[in-house]
Image (tube, rainbow, N blue to C red):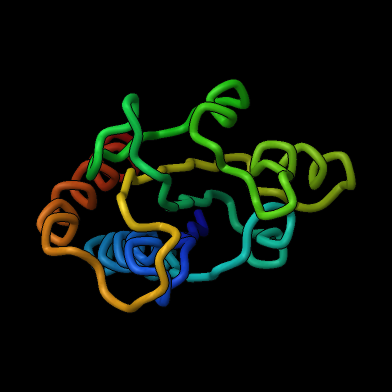
Length: 154
């Protein structure tokens, strides 16, 4: 089975880079010739150039913390209804789930198994490089959590 671990984010927008960092560390932990790593700052329908042709894709992104989404927690998004709660929209308000549906409707070879994880962070709208010590300390736990869910329990 050909698996892609895709980290979404932007490393010049502070903690928006967390999705990329977690994805890269997960890839390093898995160490399999059937598992591949990509990072990108694209969103919505534009990611399909990257994920077409894989059997399984694990997408890791960030979301702004709020009263329901606790800083440093990792949330698995399982269905379209949760999409609006987690605000997984590109800058043109086209959600990831709508993108997946459109790609299937267009007959693209979309992976049948797509897992989406979102890490709640504080600094998404500020420009700058680097992430806080507070989130750095949470990354090993997040990586382990996704690893167990996707590779040990699979």
